[in-house]
Image (cartoon, rainbow, N blue to C red; front, top):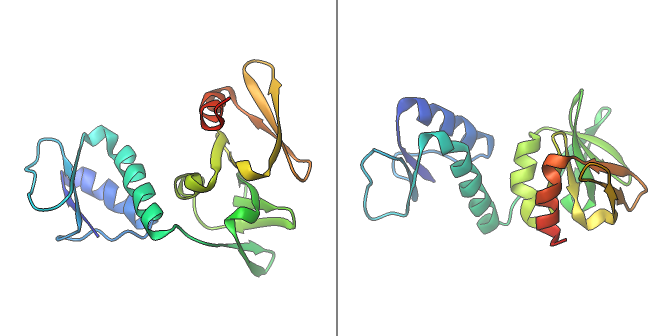
Length: 179
């Protein structure tokens, strides 16, 4: 689906990132990502990027691909020895826990396989937003936003849970909610 024209070091990093999102890297892709300084092919859509910004290119590309494809419609979560199919709209928040990434719903906590960064990228269009380094909140379940000390906020969710928005993520939250 994507063709890479770049240095071997950057190629290795990009291939690893795209594999995380199940996006195939081919020699004749529909899109071409070209590292600045390399020859730009003609006849296909091209994105030219600086090597240092390769993760931004991945985020941009993945969010566009997921929007076109409709994104993953479900998550598969594990609780004990059972697996449960969960709709993203049921997830109150996702958090990094000692045993991996956990999707918290009103019916329980489920361990999921992907990274927090993956869910942040894929589910941003449907209202998930990073609120601190270890949590993403589903804005649809936020009932109150409470101003807190030191330019922070506390989000009170429908089920009564309270999540703290760190100072680093307070500004993006205000921007996303236009407050």
